[in-house]
Image (cartoon, rainbow, N blue to C red; front, side):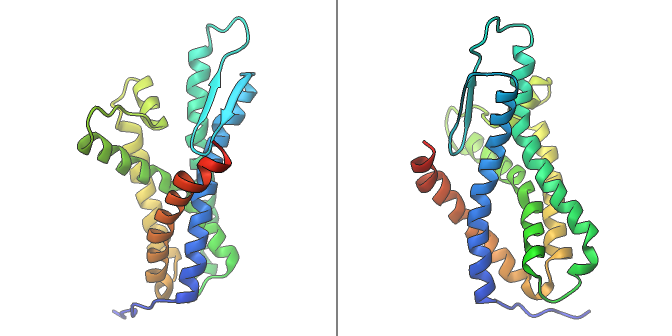
Length: 212
């Protein structure tokens, strides 16, 4: 079995690091846009999209009957948008699989990889909620997937656990099948540090100032 040496590509790391920062912000905004446009579709007048959340309020009269159903669909629109984007990216990886059999990837190939990695939201949500539930006091479930699971009468963990497992499969395929072995180590490092930097910058610094 041929062993691939662990190689660190500094230029690639910088480019992917920046890519993960922008992808983190894009992922959050595209997710929230799913909530926003569905709420607007239903005619909710008071819809406000912030850097990490979207609020909507029924301002038309009468507001009864289908309001619970509408609320559930609007809530689902965010995860559906994220999952749909990630799934399209993963399907494109499969379509162009032969083009990934090389030692380095072109820009368009990395873009498809980043699209597939929209699935990572399900892993980060699961880890975040696990930490909050087990290591903080008086925490209640707050994510979209947890609300939807409870709405259907399942355990709050059900939907996000299933989606998290799918996301792990997608991530494993991306790392070990589509990212070239000689770029794999650099990709993992850039994803780890770029993802953290993107979350800190967008959720903690830039986002609250641009979209309070």
